[in-house]
Length: 111
Image (cartoon, rainbow, N blue to C red; front, side, top):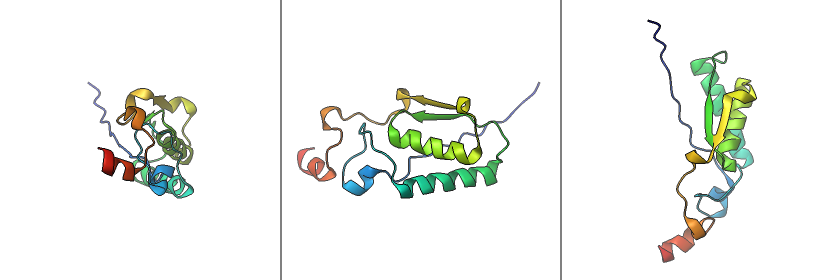
């Protein structure tokens, strides 16, 4: 019997626009900031050093911009083919309905 171990790494999205503009994330479709993209590349470099760049990583991401963008940056560093990356709405964080994209201060007074 061939037993292969699998390592699962989870990565939370790095800094995105909602972190710097005072909004909540939820289903708001925020982009990563330049700093967030830089951090994403550093995570890719760490993964490469820790796990090796020559293994067959499979990546799964929420389809929201900030999550997909961090996965794309990591994918570039690891030189992974497009087929190694799957985006899906099933990995989205909590949906706040009509309250998506509200400012954090709004939540303090309304929730």
